[in-house]
Length: 184
Image (cartoon, rainbow, N blue to C red):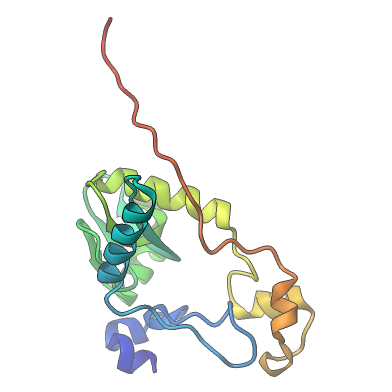
């Protein structure tokens, strides 16, 4: 499935291949990345703004890491497909590059899609990191952690009620306040 969905560059990534997640669902179910996520959040933004008369921004963040070179802050390399200006999807290459050459990169959760006035890559990466810390890893960073945390022996013995007892925050609301600098 990961080869068909993400191609060879995502199939070779050792964890969360092609953005397919196995830790948030019971049994042997998996969640796959949304197609056209940028169009979905654009429509959602429009509807929420119409209903609330408020201006909002929507940022979709995946806990899979992207890697920003320490010397070049206007670019980052993702391990999955993204719709963010300045982030380049390199798949497994980004994963191995970021892990092997840690001193040259800063790891961030991956901003996948964004709608709203452009805040800049640096700000989006900072927001992604804050959101990821608030959300936590839910049922664990991987399926092995999930099985251990839930005290179950196999995927088949994991139940919906096991997952319902855990604190998990798939959505976080962040209020961004711009600092105004200047002299009086």
